[in-house]
Image (cartoon, rainbow, N blue to C red; front, side):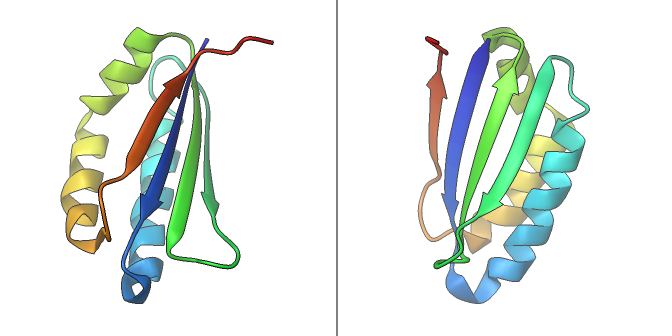
Length: 95
């Protein structure tokens, strides 16, 4: 099992636009080979901060996902909206 957590901070004034891009990305990503779960969260007190929690069958599936057309399109659409670089961290489950 391979987990990926991504924290995405966008400019506050474009939070709704970013939300629509990220929702579309999450829905398409759930269809990717090896995707066991792909959840998207929006911070309650800071709605311009988003978090994804992804669960993949293995690392190879997660890496293949990054090469998909829908990820490329989301990156292109969201890049101008970002307040900084996303923080993306991979984890292996211990328990």
